[in-house]
Length: 157
Image 1 (cartoon, helix red, strand yellow):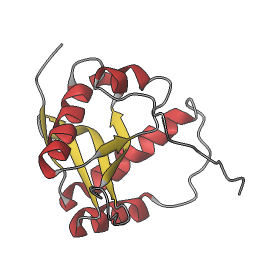
Image 2: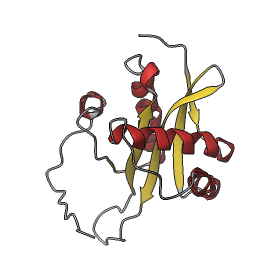
Image 3: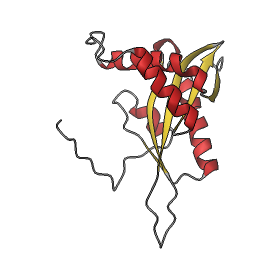
Image 4: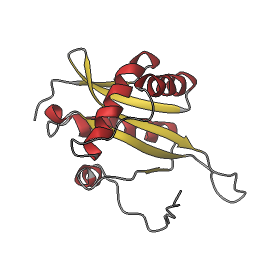
């Protein structure tokens, strides 16, 4: 395991690189045979820039040298006020990606630890994620567990 990387909060100026990595991430889902994109990379970069700028989303990046080689995103999910209990936010963790050449070297664990520490410090109640089969062991090592109460209804659109 190497520690030749740094983890830091993402900045709006990172948006273009984060969009590039998002595209690589989604290409892996298609096992090397992705269809033609239906939206331009620039649109994704602008979306990421806007959300990091206004705080709707947070993200952390892992860098080797001056290159971003991984990221994880967090979206605040507000809960309705409740007269009998706290309505602390839930964090939706998504878009967790490490470039293939940097996997299994501790970068993913370091990213999740940075995210988890932020969420503990700022009072989040729960973090949720939908892991892939490949990433599930890392999520579990980081303390994520199958929920007892979550239900999902996939909507055929």
